[in-house]
Image (cartoon, rainbow, N blue to C red; front, side, top):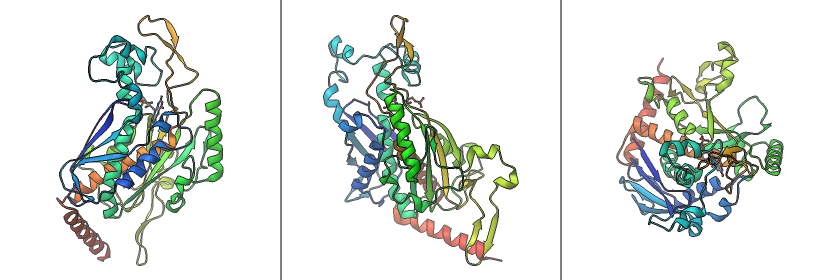
Length: 392
Ligand SMILES: Cc1cc2nc3c(=O)[nH]c(=O)nc-3n(C[C@H](O)[C@H](O)[C@H](O)COP(=O)(O)O)c2cc1C
């Protein structure tokens, strides 16, 4: 239903974003999009680049007087750092010195450098890493913030928080309550428990001192999604699979779990599954939510909960062993200006990806060329569920 295309190199002039498929009349709050971009740039453990950039969107099309027109929405995010890279990243032919100036020849283990060099058969790693860089995730955050307008109108909200950084983690147990995320942005690591947050900061400091990096886990929580989004009719329509793909596509994410996720491999069915209850006061409800809001690849009306594991990022100040791609001689991997820990920022990107998938699934179920038509369809669906659940 929705299509997203992004373009742009990390040190090129700008990131370009095209979103197609939103109905007309969806409110667009540019300040809210910029606020999400700022959240992606923050988090304890970020490096020097984030001090140079202060991302804002320029809306080029598809929006008029604060609402979508139904036509493709396009925007750009300028790269301020491009000023320092004009000849290196120029689209025009340049003297060889320009290419040599920021050349990278020693692939970093864990980055896209070597795989990209083999793919494009080049020893000019700059040409590979400029697009592979997670700078691209700013585009996704902008697109996610745009479709949040549709989710808001439908009464759905998306938040995220950090569960683990290195050895510091929230204790196992009941899921972190939605309300505990009200002030999550006040935590420098976006963690709901102040004491655990301190331990997380200590993990990042320790990694930084050692010239190392540290990974972790974030969780995205969605409230207010109607039941019935996604389908078990075909493998590629299942919403669990679509969410997993979207989250796994975030650079450095190496595992995705829905609800209790990996714990499911340890528990008996009787301990794992969420019992079903109905009473006059609460209506239909569940005893727990280990399924994370999805059964059969379809939303079941409970909170949607997805976790993602973020590996420690690959650029190390004390580099790992690699080779020089020209000489094939052993060399230390290249060192670029880099972050120490990106888990809090990756959570913001995770929110954007989940917003995207949720908005797509809502439009798939409800359709509508205008927001008013979409909301009419939502009301009709709600009335049907109500009548169905109240019937004896
Ligand atoms: C928000 C964010 C920021 C990142 N910043 C860096 C960075 O500064 N240095 C780095 O080496 N990797 C960084 N990464 C991770 C790399 O982009 C990623 O490891 C690389 O593209 C290879 O992809 P893969 O890890 O998915 O295989 C970042 C990832 C995210 C989500």
